[in-house]
Image 1 (cartoon, one colour):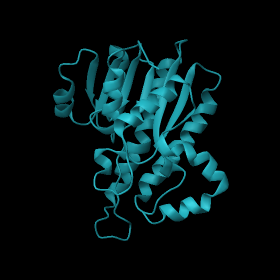
Image 2 (cartoon, helix red, strand yellow):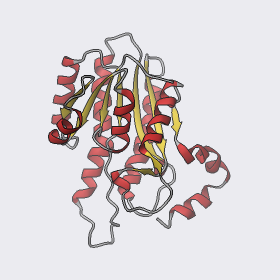
Image 3 (tube, one colour):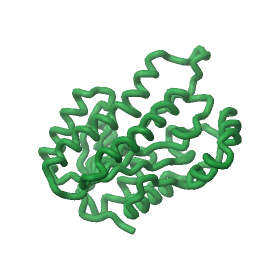
Image 4 (cartoon, helix red, strand yellow):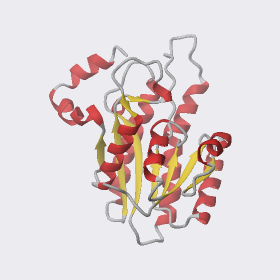
Length: 244
């Protein structure tokens, strides 16, 4: 299954799942990559004809708004938003390494940025009668949180509920909302963590297949078991994840 002839905005497209999505989609689509590092964007994508790069600080609402203004001016045909960027801090609130500033950083990147990008692009799309999509990259931790990374789990849970609620708001429009629910993926964010990981390439491929099939919830890898486990044995899953 393929996605073709679309103009797609991907946040966090310079590493991990975002980079894998860019590589898989750029041959047959125009890809707009949003990331903090202008230097890294240039190094990765300078020679690619189908890729345009927009440096953006996802912790800044003003910067996000300005970026979307520029993007919709340069590419008014944009029709897909993939909210992929995410950060995770693992120190517990009780540990010396924990920083108060990290709470706001995670909320801004993991939650505020996807909400703001979605709102701005929906505003752009409302005047157009064509099929558009928002894809929110979430996690199994949105449903079954772990002990460490409490703020990350909270932001993913909020993103999950946002995806569901926004889907309700847009169900009578031409804008679709997808949520990709991921297991542990081998990315820079998960370096040094134990547990069986799937590759970013595999995760990206399953996300694309789910988009093609128009699935509201795209369960990637082992997360396909979540709906069943949530009904049969939620206490067991909670007990397992409490160790991490």
